[in-house]
Length: 458
Image: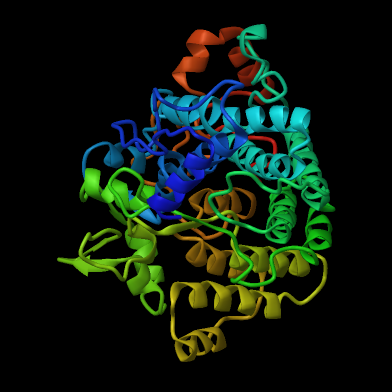
């Protein structure tokens, strides 16, 4: 939604605030005027929660995941360190604190609590979806994380870390509750929604997200694929039904990938592995351009780069991802995932604006459907929209078959393997030391080469 539309929403609440603040902390908002407290209406809190969530997906943690998965690589400055897996506890501090726990997750918890009191059920349903998205992001990165005691304020300044297996149950409970809330009669409807989604669209997105969190459990739950399939009948069924957050065409409110290109030019570029993989792919020009033998993801004068414009979108969850999940779930349960795989590729390319003839030519050249084929095609399609899902797929399937950085062994990654997780942030070590240490002990460590429950190293 453009800035004038955001302004209209905030006027109805008779409260204005800065939705986005560009800062020096890798695109994490730290806004001293951020709304808070019971006096602020839900219609004003919802936009802040949504905006920060979509920034969380594509900003700092997304870049770490994309670099680890060799879609990007460092070309200068700190990004060179990240490429060789020098990612420490200081690097995860701001996304944990300001992006998640005092950002979008706090806002979601606030909306859920107050919407319960006021019986704003549809609004509560959307907040539960966003809580699931953010909690899923947090547990994908760190494993055990605070949730059940995380938003009690002064009542508990040292929240425990909940077990990741239990958190995956919480994710499903949140999304099931969201579906129930969005099906409920609510005269006020969804309040403050920047995406202007219908109840049906949000319900379909919740089913797609449930399928996402089930398919992530294929290494630890033998029923995961079937559980994912069970959700897909009611999931997103077209690109038109997909919900997209639209970043602003401004230097304050733009898409994190474009902002990073403006603010830290040419410190991160396209990795050679990804560039080579895309050579015969019609999406290549939508992702990158070549200059003097290197491939770049950003150019302020190149409107063709789909995911690197200030006003690029970010899906809540895309139709193409939904179909990739279906293809994999079918393949894992003895079915034929070919049609779903082809539709996943077709949906992604169509969304990017690829000509139909090029799409069908590409699809006709796909190899036989297998888990490897599905995940490799998903790796290409998920570029720019949700890098964390690419890393999640690799950690549970081993695809695509990437080679760890030759300089990747360091104190935080002793074995030198492709990282399995990120370190807990320094703020937790200093402010919540007992629960922090208990979580590390429970998981057998928190270095980059330590596993988390949902993605055991096979």
